[in-house]
Length: 71
Image 1 (cartoon, rainbow, N blue to C red):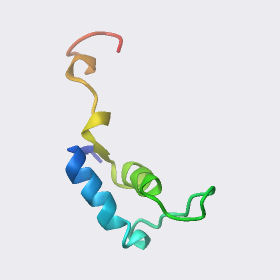
Image 2 (spheres, one colour; image 1 turned 90 degrees about the horizontal axis):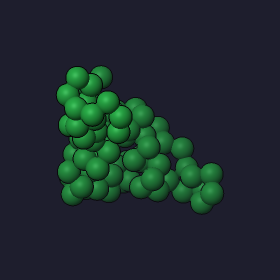
Image 3 (cartoon, rainbow, N blue to C red; image 1 turned 30 degrees about the vertical axis):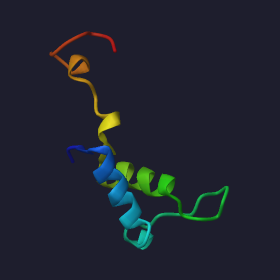
């Protein structure tokens, strides 16, 4: 599955929406707070759906065959 990158506002809005129905992602509560937080939803989005905020998108200069050998 190819990664999907959302701008900060869209990503945060998706997380806020999914916080109302965490069972869709089968998210486990935080071991520290015992609650499902935005952090757990974000981890689930990345690991289960390959959806990430644009801040985590690789830079073009780090792309294979397209830039610097080390980033």
